[in-house]
Image 1: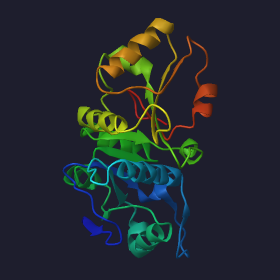
Image 2: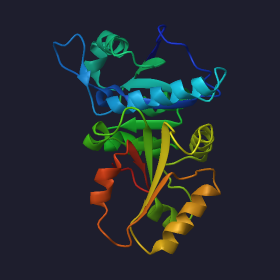
Image 3: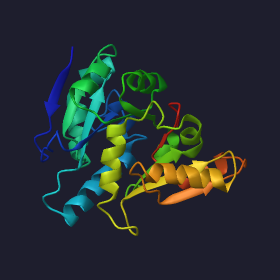
Length: 252
């Protein structure tokens, strides 16, 4: 069974023009059995960063329609039984969430498709893989996401995947790339609330340059680029403080 609840306390976006982002409520909040207001989860800074991008877009143009339209999706049966806590927690923190969707594990991908979701973010690798197989751009959230900033949305691209596949990874749809690239173009080079980062681990600087050019021709102008030339990737990844990684496999 699938049900959706519209958040009447926020202005609804035009779903045909917005970039719809679905985040699992289990990633957004740490749910407890006796809590009226849940604690902040790993995706909390991400939710704030998405909201900040929207605020800046509307500051630039009050009539802007290319905005993030955030949906919280719940697949856990126990959490669904306390659905009012999820909605009240969202409102307590002042989060700009448009809709709440409650779905069983078997139907959650259909819920994503029905809501025209462009990006699905979850802490479950199984959920991310299932959504990706159905063509929904998906990424895995981890404890690293919790350490990301709340004032700037930071998206990491894996340059090695791009050069290996010669196309965007299967987990990344072209429609998402078009929308996110267009959204980034609304801001100047400096002081943008939306930042693209690319890391290449293998090869030399030429490989990194080619990956940058490849992204640029497809509408993604990278703000930060790191060519590691075989050096370990983990130290720089820890410093980047990205919210999620887009790669050829669903990973954090």
